Length: 244
Image (cartoon, helix red, strand yellow):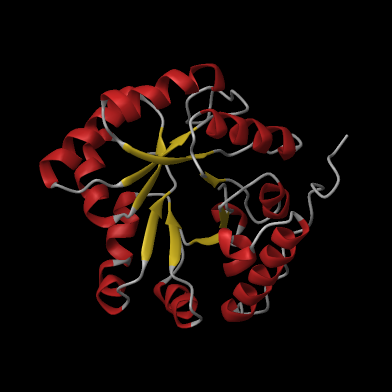
């Protein structure tokens, strides 16, 4: 049985083009409604526009509409897209929301403001060491594989407490929150509630959860960042369909 208010809903229908400014406004209004329905201040929920595989014109349209926080899946793709915008928009914030390989850690710390996908000790150590070397104490989220899906990244819930403690106390990473991607074929409410409980045990206040089809449910369960791509930029072709 779905929790009240957590039913999956169709993504917003993007206008031909699409009209990114209008889509951003519609998503913003939906976020505000969901936050108020949960008894929360809408200002406590940030929209992270998922901009992977988006062209420069789409990014420029979003920036012109006032959007400043974006999520990218791959370091190399982000390197090719964002440096010029960094120069023009000092308040731009980039989150890495895709898997990070240890050989890309140095580049990731140079470009991103937040890494949301810390999920194994080798990676955590590499980020900690590069942060110490470069003097950049980047914000990090631990990714939790709430559905224990073997094909997905993320530390499993049973190992999350020990891993979070290792990252914060031994490696001195600046872990500020948690992230999850619920299984596509399951009710997301259980996964959002599980992530919230793990965060509560560690005093973490930032929760990155919820995408185009379920961000309203995520807000009900305490999301502080929702990762929305399709509802902002429109659907891509089947070959490029959004996975995050």
